[in-house]
Image (tube, rainbow, N blue to C red; front, side):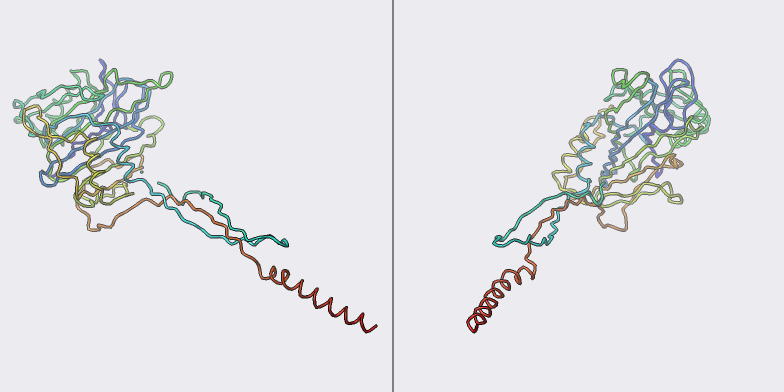
Length: 403
């Protein structure tokens, strides 16, 4: 199976844990009617274990809006392992890909101040210039023709429910409609756009994990406003190639238009990988801002913070595999600032033809060292004047003697 959009798409199919139905907003998060929740910032860390064809996907998002009750759906090609990762993971990754400081010394010649009898002078004046650039498993089968709850658990700041719609003789549209009805019956948000979005995943028989923000994870930052940076969640599953969930349901744009949002994707793989949107016929606006090999100690720390340790899954089998030794890994960071996004397909990653490292422009700190030099005319004054005085004095003396 090559289409693996498991889409931790907060931007998609967002669902609301409320008793009444509302239309999903264009950004994918579904608050109460008349309220709004946006994803203001998001980052993902993908670890691609090429030997075992396992993808470990860790995502962190920041929500902002007026609703305190919302959720989202995450389709995966098979039953995922869910685990909370350390919130400092993305700080560690950013420290690897941040712009480096480069120190340069500029020597500036300064003329010595004129003064008789002054001694030699040499001094240093350190100053800092402005930066030249800166920049940062196996799916359990449900009974035919129905929806089965595979798992319910609390993970990080979310309450998660893993579902699967097992097709009998139904087509994808019918199965998607049944799954949407089940979600609505159990208090989730539903909409025609959501049902249409679900069709592809029902067709390919993927699992669906429904997340909602846990009550005790909410944080109020002002009157009637909620801001939350939820703890990152790791989802581990098998795949043919690494993928980032980018596809979004088609829905009307929210009032006031979409808010600006920044997406950063960090990909750890055996080499530098290139990204493409779907089959590559359309351009993904994400750009490589950093790419290069990572020291083993830094990679080992990232693995630790991502909670990448073997552990038994819900069925008792080890579905989260310990990645290979930390040596030989290459980290690539992509940055996407597009809004709205061209969320027509998933973003896939393949080994790039160009293996040249990429770095952010360095932050240059310039130290200016002043070197005092003596102009030529100083010598003329220091030596010429005394000689002139002596010669003139002798000439005057001879004149006076003849008189």
